[in-house]
Image 1: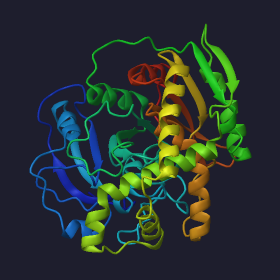
Image 2: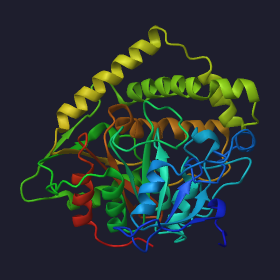
Image 3: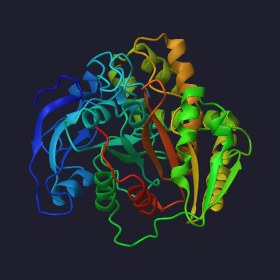
Length: 394
């Protein structure tokens, strides 16, 4: 497979369907953290590749895709150990954003987003801990979905922070996105494709760039239904900055617990921003500050799950703006990461499903509008989106 977009770590990795099913005829790629029998994952870092063995079997999610009739075509690039939202990799290069060639693709499921946006595959699997499916989907102009935490098995997937890790997926066509959802969620129930209460998240909209805000607000008419009540309110009882700081602290502690021993033993070579992030994660302890953050996580989860129930949803921008330029300073990278995580932490802390829908702003840049639904309302959200957006984005 020609890879002029640098989307793939292993473009030659192909696996034929195991059975016939709902995904017959679809091609898919996987982020290079999913086990594929006979393949060795790099997780974005050569030292990881050198210190790990070939997979003995497929990840559970890969197995489900193959049994549903999909064909695997390639493993895609990721940020080092998935600990970034940019998609820039000092070792393997940066996948090229097909919609904005001079801009980052977003991470850490960067290669998966690019492979889909460029038309190399129909759908791609990624992982989403702090926004790693939602953000590159927004930057690259594709549909992206992060499911409710814990509803899809992470077996055979390299973890980052298990308390927040989910499998996610991307597609240009909403029908493909929904069909993959029904396969991976393994839920045969039928859901009404509607929401009774739609919350416009005022605090989320306040931190968004003007061009993005104007464009997305013009598309809010897509939310109108015969009986939905639309309410405007701040989602965070404290502040999104407080929520984001808690998320970053909890995530960092989880990440060090997951990978700290390997890092101390192997002493891998990381890019400057990733190295700095791991160095900070190593300092986090389960002290009073951590306990306050953890109590906030429990409070946020309870608050949002009660607020949304089964038939409520939150509407907000996926990212503060379109994809930033490649080659920014570390300070600029961290500033963008801080603002972006104030949006992405909402679903992260609460464990709720989030769908990002692609649009084009007034300057021709790709941006995303997000819908967050109640816990385990994944298929309701996907069915709603399919009825609203039955079209392909190329």
